[in-house]
Length: 182
Image (tube, rainbow, N blue to C red; front, side, top):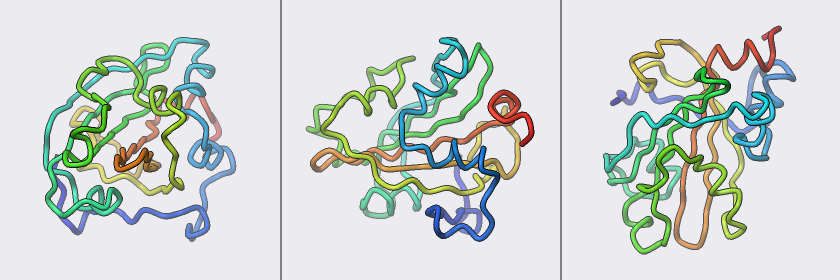
């Protein structure tokens, strides 16, 4: 999924938003707790993770900047659906620069269908950076999800020299359950 520079979104901190979404949408976008735990509760324990793609790929420019990695860096990329009761609710893309991941003790290749978020929140050594939001480019979505202008959030989890950038895109099926008025 490549994207031209003109399609790169502007990521905003909460206080930078010109026009904020509804309070219910903001509640999900800016919640600093574990999204996995919230989705598990919302789905009455019907939460699951479906891996879509993972491997070593060149990171996007916005990802390199967020990770303090040189442009064009190679990194581990993991794309998954976070599902509620079998339905894709969130598309998540997590990345870490190869140079930081090597020797960090974190093996993202072994996650399979386990939640990366749960791993990050259970390791007290990780600190979460400030959440940013954007309208996620359609070109960055899986081909099966051709929705436009979906709300997304991202934050960087750091532990010593390692940074893991996690972006989460809220799909229409999620909002039908979480906020039917949205």
